Image (cartoon, rainbow, N blue to C red; front, side, top):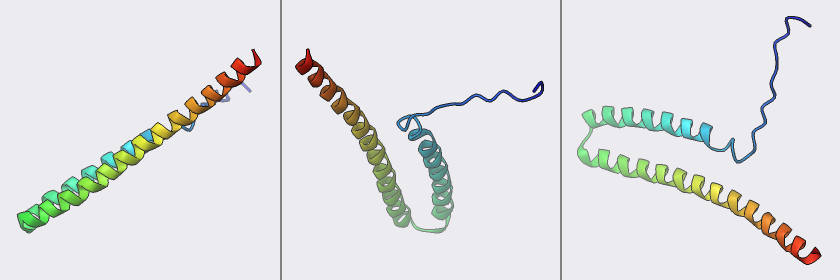
Length: 93
């Protein structure tokens, strides 16, 4: 009982646990892809590098749009239930 480590339970809500792991994965992915593009640019023509950069841009844009939409719909869900509760309270009172 004397030497037991103190355990602290940390609660994370679904809206808080969304982003950090995804942002870290995106950063690692972008670093790896940047290195690959740099190495490929030494071997291939400028047109191929441009095509790869366009594809990478679409992937990054898709990630950003999905994240923004996920956050937006989460906030709208909470806002919807707040409005429903407010309407119920107005009807009761």
